[in-house]
Length: 337
Image 1 (cartoon, rainbow, N blue to C red):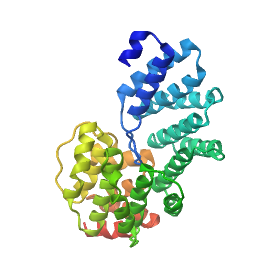
Image 2: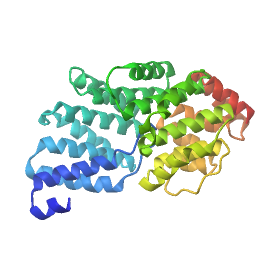
Image 3: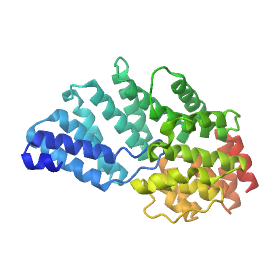
Image 4: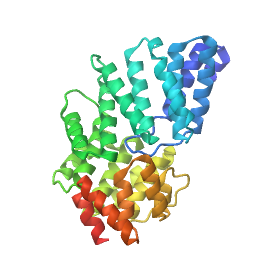
């Protein structure tokens, strides 16, 4: 970026700003809590201004996409208008990969903003766009987001089926296959199904599992959740993921990992800037945490907060939702708490 700003090539400068905004929006994984990225907003805003001045709608669609995702992650509802603007400008983007990537980003961002209807609409449009393309990674990611949506609010049968299909599909999805396994293992463990550990162990055996917090974080959370459900938590195996998340400023991952370590009775280092309901959960404010999960449409986490509370009515309500979701192992675990 320093080089581009010196030579005065505004087209390449706009493309560089788009890539910077994209990197800031890449930390979110499968969880419903967004990673706030104010720097990503700044880069994307500059990119949009440049694209409008240059008359480059093909680049403007990408810039609006990352402006929308970063704004939504910071709690700015204008981000949804940005995403709609990006999708409306899609015909100017000649590359199918770009169009599919914008749908991927829009769906994930809407999901993490608690806008389920919009997320489902973006997913459906993206899958139509990518149906006959060779952009297999885009299709894989769209299906992965679809499974995350189903895991968040139900039905879990749909999520499990979609994840199993992704894991069994041909090709080399790379890191995304490890994300699929982490989510599948957690859903299976919550239902008390015996192959949850095997699914997770196969992911942990991959050398890429310890590359960065984007993958190591979700796998570490899965390890802790499986341990919490069975009463066998060993936090030593997840400290590497915690350290990586701290180094990269991945506060959403620190919140999720810290939340599950707290449930399992493992001490964690104090964290600042944890976003979403995880902040309240880590502070023991279960009513606030449950309300936050409710606003995001995350029924499982809301139910667990209620079921672990000190209020009899809340515990009964949380247990009823866990029973409805089919979380038999979780229900048994919270009943012992």
